[in-house]
Length: 210
Image 1 (cartoon, rainbow, N blue to C red):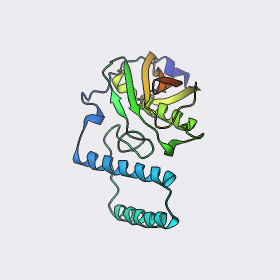
Image 2 (cartoon, rainbow, N blue to C red):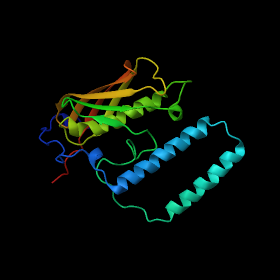
Image 3 (cartoon, helix red, strand yellow):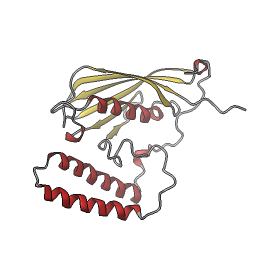
Image 4 (cartoon, rainbow, N blue to C red):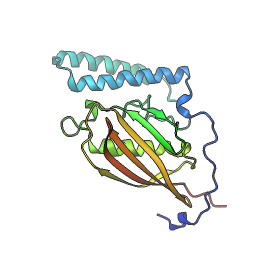
């Protein structure tokens, strides 16, 4: 990594949009969120439903037909900022999260992870915990008053197994800013018990050369 990142002045303001991206409730967004919710439920039932093979064969045929129907539409060429499918109500990779921005010094999210995210029996896969941290770090910087940036390094400490179907709370705070680098810390609790912590260095891209 270019050490010159440490020497740049930190002058960028926070994201200018006064309305957080998750508050933009359009018909398009609502319909996609509903579809993502249904898909997440399908994944859950594929893993846990005690159904005969014929039921899954029928489900596969209907899902294949649905995919073909949607594939007939042109590919959308643009996405509003910070609303890609990696986290949130429209994501099928992680469940919908609730955002709490009541504390200006912290960015807090709440969610639950079911059987689709299982590693050890009854526990969330450790890779999913790291992924959750990374996604939330990527959403936190606007609220915390620092510019958009990308993950440089992230260290996750697993303090205890994270159970499935618990209320998970991820809390992010800004430690400091040094040039283009922002140092953030995070914690994960499951039903009030701390199960993991993380430290991340987010790095702003270098400005284009003159």
